[in-house]
Length: 248
Image (cartoon, rainbow, N blue to C red; front, side, top):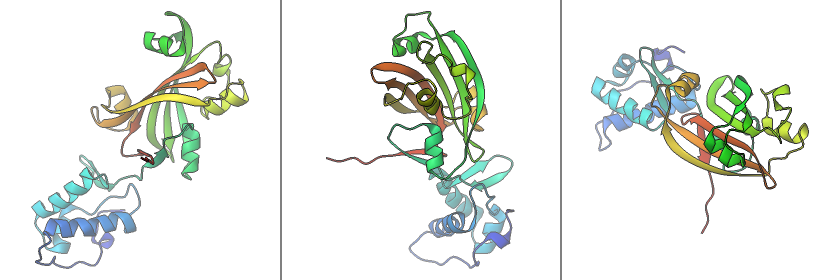
């Protein structure tokens, strides 16, 4: 959708009231982004908003800037401001990316970036209970929801327990394959999550800028007492959110 007046709610000069005009405009634009425009749609231009609501460029930029900060809108230099994608909402539970995306009613897809048997890094060897210098199976993948990049997953699997992994289709759920084809059901995991600046290679794959905040996951997954997987994942924070219930 273009940034035309057709996208705007009925225009009027904003009222002189205790509510600042930038806050009045923020409410109007938020309603437009939520109720009228689809995720990824182009917002009307600054000039269109200025003309429609009789406000200054400073007022428009204050309203838009707050909506960008809140995650409702996304600025793309040289192209404009767009309605942000609704993030995938994940509760803290053990599930594969494929299962999470399907549960949201979205279509998961995967690009396999690397699939090889090679020497495991020292921290991965420790996580999997392997001796230093031991070979393991390395799978690096770009994960998408409805065709939009959501995460980069870099995972390692002990070759003893994941033998045959490189011979199967790696574009689907590896957890399903481990259970159905290799006889190892992932039933628990230890995981840490933190904010991190996107490394250059990850940023390119996720379609964002180097240094943009992303969610970084470090997880070791088990089948019983056996460590099967050590994975690092980087998620776009505007397309993936964690939710949880906490109790006293």
